[in-house]
Image (tube, rainbow, N blue to C red; front, side, top):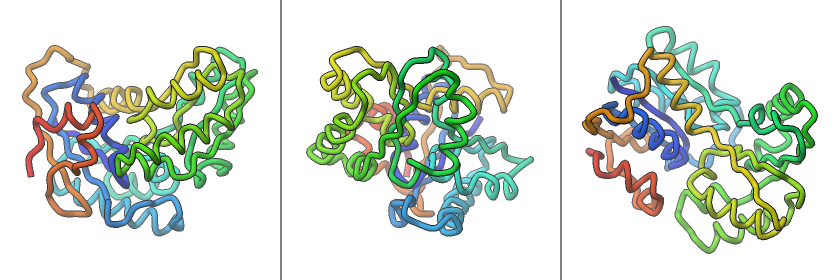
Length: 260
């Protein structure tokens, strides 16, 4: 079984690591676009073109499914990706975990890129799933880029800035960008220090990995033989994991099986 993932950068590591935990025997293909990132400031048409290029590079390896491990690409390019690849290759998008976060009511915040914050897409999700919850959108300028380049000082500054703009009474924070899941512990710590209370963080990696396996009719087998390979494609060319990926536990866990 081979599953491909695409993203503008290393945000796909979280979903890939979740897949590796659930199915250690699955072959993984990571297709990203470091030469074209960030995608957020691009037009929807341009984002779609870049996402399709990543998808085509991944599709050339013969995957059984493709995960769009990027919120921005899921917003703008999911329909085009499905039109090109399905039904032969199921395409699974990434949706912020607003529904489970809002299920308990109370106050929650959604951390996302400036491009996603305030978007019609995110507003539709909030209106559909908020229920009785109070939702605050928190834009996080610079955080995705800081994570992409493993710039610790910039990560801390962006996280501290967003935490200061997060209401103190939130009980949950939805991570609306896949890059943010790589620094979830730092985000949790900053929000708890600011608000003085425990807070839950909800990302999408585990859910999207589980959904991909469901689409393939492949139940999780976390005790399977750890035999799955890892192929990395950067802007259409075979490569190794970017050095910055190894700054995160997810990248280190995956790196042992990477092949150029």
